[in-house]
Length: 214
Image (cartoon, rainbow, N blue to C red):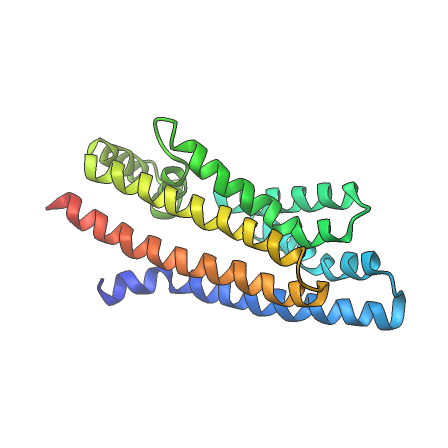
């Protein structure tokens, strides 16, 4: 991969790394501050700790404006958070809330393999073509190439297994470790998995494009 191609996804990597830092430190700090100064209740502490990621997601959605796959992912994350809060009762539900969506997204990716075009085809089209009709037409035309079809299905499969696996691992951590440890570990786990998968996806996509034009 040449430097220009590598630079194309670096802003995404940097943004994800910054989110990991914020979502690791601030919720843990809020958790301990709540337990110390507000209430010893575990549920209250977790509610306050998870408020920051939820509010940040809402802010990012407003900042992105318009309807696009990224904004839809953020919106679904907020919706699943609200559903988790409404369920109530078990504090562990709040610790699982982020993965309610990512797990669903992973299952959705795997299920989309049964359809004519897998889910990540549409995300790829948005990232590489945006709303440009000419670029979208070129992107769609490449689907007729069997190499491209296999590539999109492989990318979708990888995302499906990564996010489904993250959900299963989070469940194990939530039911075996303390809330404070889970708050500190899971954002790093999810963020790292996403960063690695994004980097691999871009590298593989550029390699795939080069193979298709040979």
